[in-house]
Image 1 (tube, rainbow over the protein chains, first blue to last red):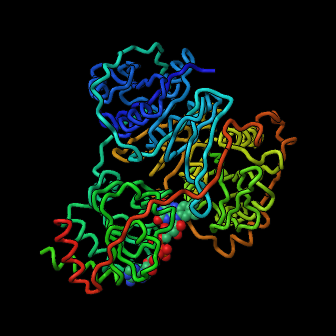
Image 2 (tube, each protein chain N blue to C red; image 1 turned 90 degrees about the horizontal axis):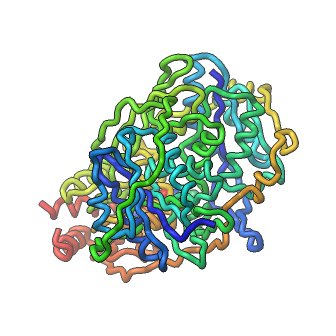
Image 3 (cartoon, each protein chain N blue to C red; image 1 turned 120 degrees about the vertical axis):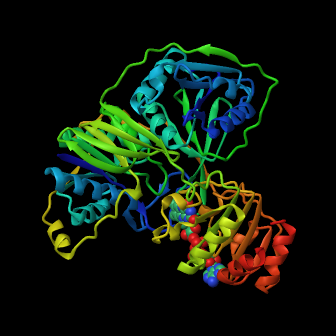
Length: 321
Length: 258
Ligand SMILES: Cc1cc2nc3c(=O)[nH]c(=O)nc-3n(C[C@H](O)[C@H](O)[C@H](O)COP(=O)(O)OP(=O)(O)OC[C@H]3O[C@@H](n4cnc5c(N)ncnc54)[C@H](O)[C@@H]3O)c2cc1C
């Protein structure tokens, strides 16, 4: 039932490796327990991202090389990966839970008729089973999922849950994967333009000012944006604020939003529901502002200010001048 | 244009219980509402119909009580609705859910477009759309922020890939998963609510669908939940600041070197 390899799907984004893939290579090495960690990449001819991947020390880098991967659609990618998996079924395949990972992985899963757990927050082995940890519905409930009877075991894992660590002690073997590129003209990528999501890209923000229901007013949004600008950061929100005209779902932090890992997080008028806090566990310094001294958000804060969010914002702006 | 929108019901509040024996989520009792993202999918379907003619059909898998969600969708303007309901469908993971939906889609008759909302609020995270597309061997465009009609057989879709926007021309039949940013779903008007009660709502079980009993419900699922628990929380020692906002701000700015 599959060999003893863990494959990490390396995603390419704007001609670079999407950073989650490095995080997943490090994680795979940590849980491998003797299993071989293989980084799998589908890249066009002139791209040589294996030199970047090497730094993180997988045991092997397996390359699907074809010029047509530039602008390949989900169907073509899933088809190519399927051929490689069929030749040599691994124990597990780990995808980043990015848009692309979430689109290609389930197509591959359907071809393989195996299990896939999306959006995991943790993974580890229990014997031969990969335990897949993810939040589930309900009041802060987590669940463990396994796929006991089929291989490969498939997961997508959230960005920024694990830290990528450079490991030059291993010289990965570089191998070409055998497959044939089957063109699928039913869907054609006509153009792809990088976008600067400066206002919304919370994933990599070093400073985040987070607004919750208790802090919402047009004025406070403006003040929070000013403070974010001053500190070189971004404004994020808890879920109730995604209904407000200033924000959308992509500004949302938490279980059904984005997982963040800033050096500094300032929570304003956020109570600290588990669905919010799972998204901010990796924040380094945390300041929280809440009128209620007993709000759970203070349990994960370094500094607490019991009082009004607007007053705090104004004081910060006033004193930073 | 024949458009099928797959919708889902999610519990409205957090009062969901876990069956300690089977580890399944027990949702009876918890009031259900339509997964809010599915309203965006229905809106997309209605706009496609306004432009191209045709019909909008809703499809859902779940217990009989889910007809209420279908009524909501019909009141938004969909033409008909199908509920796939049977005890045998229970405990399905995404693979078994997609298999069942595909059986329903085949029985309804091949559509031009199958729409899904971006992701449901609870357990599964937008996987079912791509699995359905693969099972039907049709192309997909996920995370769509714009859908435009090029011709009766071609759509142009903008996909938001987070760090880039991709423009895709896709031949029908196709599966599209929409993001909530794509539109503002219309409200149910009183007249449409009244009309919704006259629209056809069909219920099918596993016999109607002629499905392989080994591929539905719990039996057809490759994944099993082994444990459900409250995560342990790491707590920090919080330092409460002065109640005077100015002093509090100064302390932070000094101590964190801002
Ligand atoms: C399946 C599921 C997924 C979810 N996913 C997410 C998610 O990804 N992200 C998310 O955020 N939520 C999510 N939620 C919702 C979550 O459970 C909470 O409801 C939500 O996080 C609460 O947001 P909040 O803290 O802003 O609001 P509230 O809980 O209403 O808290 C407001 C806080 O503001 C304080 N306050 C009031 N006035 C002031 C003032 N003037 N100044 C300062 N403080 C003040 C109050 O004391 C209170 O603590 C999810 C829920 C479910 C069921």
